[in-house]
Length: 380
Image 1 (cartoon, rainbow, N blue to C red):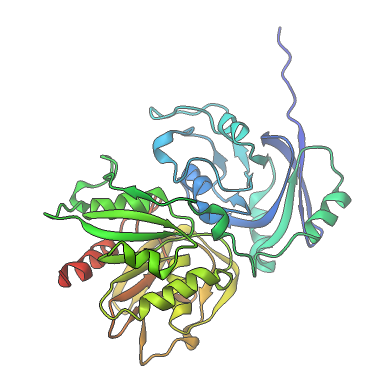
Image 2: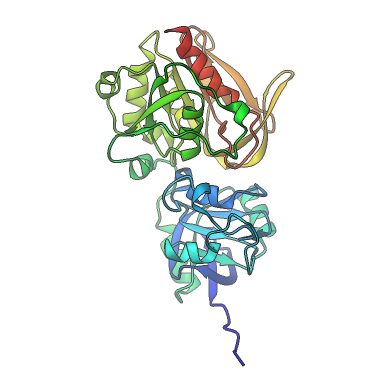
């Protein structure tokens, strides 16, 4: 008769002194980062592999993870980018025909630390009241006091440029079409692909797939790319990607965007961090949100026009900092009236704070890729 192995204890320690005790899963060790929460009911693998979550310990409000296992097709990058995972409970066995491995084995293989068995509802309420905060997940025997000292000495997310760390180091081309599972009505096939340069601040594969599905041949450049390197490729449009960290700290990206906006006839499209960088290049300011927007059901729009959107960001543009004579705020987050999208009034420049590629999430906003292509088509 086999004796059940008791799970190892784990601690979650926040910088404000809160200590929660649970059970370890995934890799063993200590991970320190910003503790945030995601309200999505699905898509945990896409969340964990999204480079925008670099440096963060993600609390999942959905009570059970691991139900569908993991598979290579759902990854947004080659490996997880989250620093740690916080869950109420873990499914003992996955149950899905697409499963290739269990969530726990996958996290162990990629050295991602997790904690389960804590009251995630209480933790999320704590974060909503006090804001996102640095914390530590530990299963290596460190004491709460030792962890608290480490957490309090860790840098704040404000002021951190994390884009350079997750960006590609070398340029590459992307022409792959979206997976067959995606609605084929959202796929376009122009006679000639549109030449697009995408700046990788932490780009998701789903974005590249949607650009390709809308008829774009994409060349991906590092976050450090210069205006000269971009223009040497003679793009018909430039895409500024999502990514982690404080947008104001991505100085090379802002400088590039400032150069791009001076080109009166070059379409530029930004998503999430790229949208914020575009706003900064247009003279705006950004600020850190209390606990951010991370989930799949955020309503955004203007009067009479609403999109249910997927979001993942901890910073936002200050609407009052944008010059209304040049920049129009076209969409607001209808939960808190933060800036959700902008467009230049006379140049082919626009950005959206949310994720029109979804993955996971609703497809309401996929039309923004078509909008980008339409801007390029007008200039052919």
